[in-house]
Figure 1 (tube, helix red, strand yellow):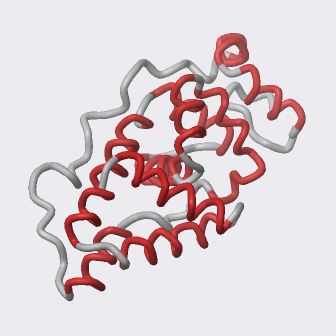
Figure 2 (figure 1 turned 90 degrees about the vertical axis):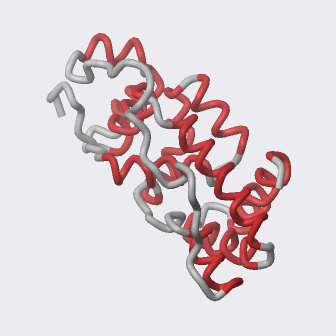
Length: 181
């Protein structure tokens, strides 16, 4: 499976399920179960590569602003959620993490654990045994890339994330890291 085929699976599943991220995950699992073991592992490699691309401080900071406190497990789910929206969304938030605000209407799905382990489940269903991934496919990285922002500094945060802060301003019930909510 090449990158084009990978994104076709992800985007076809999102297009079919619409805003229902849990349904997207079920559709991805169904698509994986229709593949052979090598294709499933290739899909998983592409998935992990995109997760690595999304594993940055600027994006983590944007997620914290939009979603509230985010720990490592939450951020993995957030990365999966972003990825499940397709290649164009991944590219936009990678280029400008402030674009994460475009997913605000779907933010209730951001912490869902629906995508974790889909390839493993598909391999068990198709081969009857758990995978022997090998290598470092399922090893965590060293930490997010880039430099974290001081989100308690309202001025800096407003400069770095103007669209997300505008969303927060329109939703006064949401907490702000600088503490004025």
